Amino acid sequence: MATIASRAVPRRWPLLGMLGVALAAGLLFWVIAALPYLSLDPDHFGLGGPALWPRRYQLLVHIAGGTLALFVGPVQLWLGETRSKLAWHRALGNVYLVGVAVGAAGAYYLALSTPSGWLYASGLFGLAVAWTVTTGMAYLAIRARAIEQHREWMIRSFVVTLAFVVFRAVAVGLGTVGVGFAEAASFAAWACWAVPLLLLEPCLQWRKLRATR
Picture 1: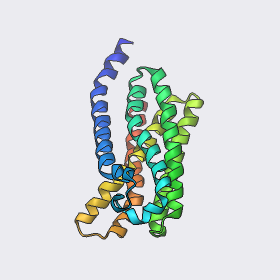
Picture 2 (picture 1 turned 30 degrees about the horizontal axis):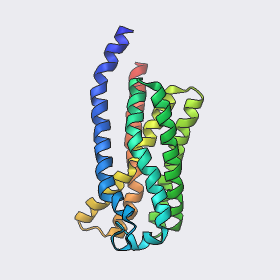
Picture 3 (picture 1 turned 45 degrees about the vertical axis):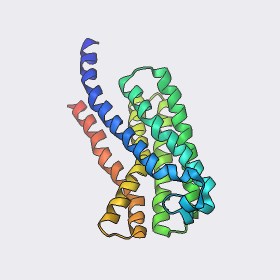
Picture 4 (picture 1 turned 45 degrees about the horizontal axis):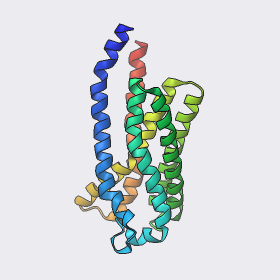
């Protein structure tokens, strides 16, 4: 027991650092990108305001669910990874699940009703599917008491949750080098979730390979 504890404690600082960065990035994104939509002012309705204004209530549903998942996720992952306050971990897991369900419902509607072209719409729809699948698999895994699978799927789910932050960073970054907004948004709609999941998977599997050695 002492050996296990001594090996687990040093890992908390890197984990705390990563989750802290994710939380800070999420907060910055929320203030810059999400907060303007809460004004319900058609003249100051955030990025893409004219196209989104007719669907503002569905967008607000999406923002509400995404906000819940974005800020609950780091705390829930911390409690799960450190095996501390598991009752809180389970309770926050239910809150996170509700946030994803509400956010994904809004995302499906926005993807299917966007006038911005099929490439952008399909990227957003794929993001909603990835969000649903990763979170749903995490839920099914914990119901089956498959703890390691639950852990991995929850990490994947939160990476998809962070896709909204990545989307804005990619779109703005491409805009600064002269890429048009429509083209940048279409690329970002796919890259914001597919690339992070692709980069995450070797990290998850490498841990298993080290364990088998």
